[in-house]
Amino acid sequence: DIMLSIVKGIKFKLRPGFESGDECYIDGEHSTIVRIGLLETVFEIDNGRGKVWRYVPNTLIDNVVLERIITPKKDKLKESKKIGLITE
Image 1: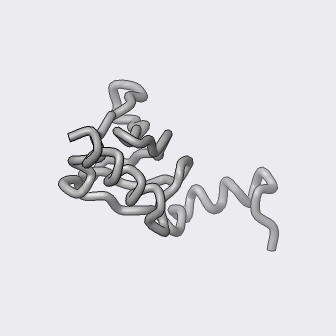
Image 2: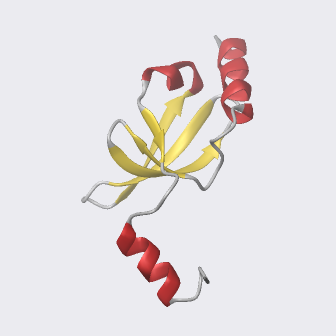
């Protein structure tokens, strides 16, 4: 089981498109990838009760719906422009 988890962790870490710090949706909840480890991947989720960390064993990573956010919402984009993070 440990070897399978390590192999899946390495496969997920090497998969293009996902890395630590990425914003994404996991099972419909907005989250940020905290860490992609050998045995588990950690997501930070602000679910209205506070920020929580969700630990997903890499053997189960294929069983969750994971969507990467590639363009921010318009209000976040405006805020980024306002504070100088994005220049045109």
